[in-house]
Amino acid sequence: MSRVPAKKAEKPQSELSYEEGIEQLEALVERMEEGELSLEETLAAYERGVALHGRLEALLKRGEKRIEMLTPQNGEEKRIPFETEPEHIAFALEEE
Image (cartoon, rainbow, N blue to C red; front, side):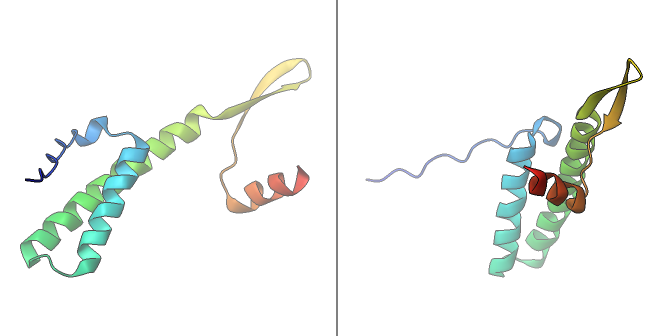
């Protein structure tokens, strides 16, 4: 007799890591794309997805604030925010 693994208890949204949130969001999208959910299940999945998106966005913004580069300028340290725009990333990769 085969046993079906027990479903993991979902963490409260406020405790999710970025990776866990992405994993859950991808699973929700996959379930919705299959088209086999009822209207109520689809709406609940959509609501959960919107909440997860908000959590992920907040985590990214917090991460952006934490990532700062320290560069000396006139003998003083100056904080320069890490650039997250794709053109800045591409430019940095071309220089390597």
